[in-house]
Image (cartoon, rainbow, N blue to C red; front, side):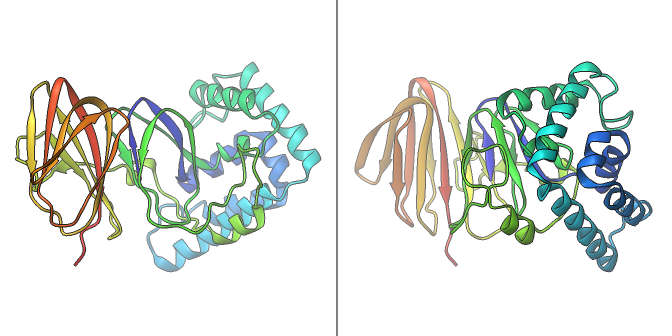
Length: 297
């Protein structure tokens, strides 16, 4: 889960299929990279089924998306170098029409040009046409299912994740790119970006005055609370049936569990044991803190 601390942008999950099909029609570099036969096969396969919720149809659409994405990610080095340069040049020269009339335009063109300046001739440039592009304002959040592709492009975030034994990379990195494993492990779920945005709610274990909001993803492993107190503000929290980690991102004050009280300043991290009653008080410049926790049944 990603909660924005500053203005943030990145990629999150696969775009709706009709968007990818549109780019295959209007971006010649993408058709060349994929191959004409593979591109036409995908467009034909999803042309009338992109919005279907029938499980069998969705399964077939995911298989078509996997085949298309595999064709992209296994392109030759020579094709990647030539066509990424051409793609960036097209975006720079015709920004208003780049990507087609429905899903393209100047914003997409500017993104392509920016990414090419940071990672020239990188296959990730074409992934921008496959993955949802998202911008978040401070406090907005997205949840990423396991084995869904994502990339953080700019901005500061609070990130919380379940225990993981791997990070598989394929683009926008100088580190090892494990394309084969990535292609095989992805879920190939596709949906509008709005489906992955989260809506925080007031946290029932706070004082109820609206200073603490809960980001609760559809999994059991964790949830995150954001507490924002004005100068001199305070909040008492009821016990949580599991451990917590608190990180302070702004301001100063104090944090207390029972009779133990510690100074609280930006950048500090605290562990709070299960069933402990917690109290946070803000100093003269207020405080913003995030608390990740897991309630054990």
